[in-house]
Length: 397
Image 1 (tube, rainbow, N blue to C red):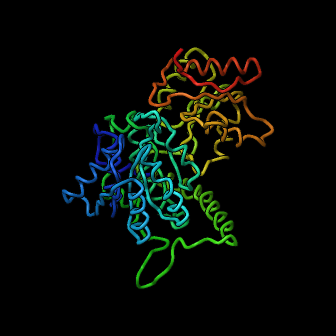
Image 2 (cartoon, rainbow, N blue to C red):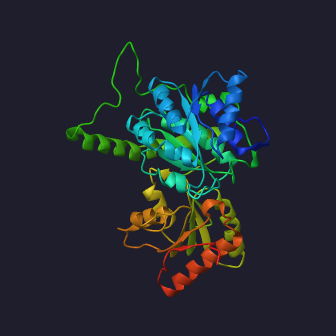
Image 3 (cartoon, rainbow, N blue to C red):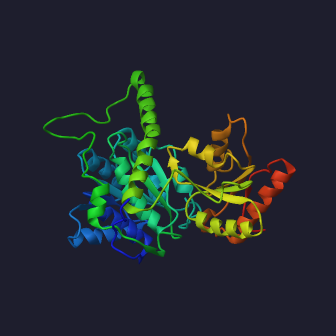
């Protein structure tokens, strides 16, 4: 393939700014958003870009996140390429409208700077905000670093606007851990992005000259069939999502997959992560590999639709799987990711021993020592032939 076309060497850039620049490169028509820590820098930068005339778009200030997503639904429905961003309580305030956006198949792209939900009041990173919205019908992906956050934003528009898909899409990235960090980021040039991301041609559009109804009442005799169709559309988005990653690699030279692994091919013990902690976990894997231990890492990139076959293939040879959740499922299984993993493997005749951990809540560091502890306890459980009860790592005595 030809060499990727970029602006050249990586430049130091705050990750939030890189996401805003990705929205600019996507040539969005509408940004409707409300500031909330730690996503504020994204929409602040976009407001500056629009005000300076560097992006021909409308920035619509609103009084809340509920209003922001409501505006996005309207602008997307009339055929405008639409972007927003939020975090934590802001995402929770959007809750009602999230379901409307997906049911109406509006290809809105939203960046979510993952942050703990209150209370107590906490502005730092974990995944409790997005796990509370996992069943909202949106495509959802996770970035591990700044380059990925930029790339996945462009990818999100490509997939969301594919007429086979036409679904809203969330790009998750860790609040503060990524959002406020300056990293080396390679910015693609406009011409290359145009090759990857075509002009938005909506599947459906509100038009006064050709009136249609969107989102009418769903009576009991059609509601079930409607939700079934919505479910099938989300599941079917897997194919276009993978295709869009393959095309991204051809054009930009960077590769993404629904499930990604690190030194996992011959590993007896695998650690499963989502988001930014995966890169720290890789260093711990390297340390233990240097001692001769057969350990590795599995990372979930595509969270919705869940890539069942890719996941099963990635963990097929391991003997034990340690699942790290960064959110709690109150009153049920301790971690939402672990419960999904176990459900995905329930009908498999051969499945690894699954050991469950919850770590990094409310911004608490997941240290090298914590990763070593989880590897040690998983290895001990494998030796004993029995998984211990789920546990929270890093609790103060």
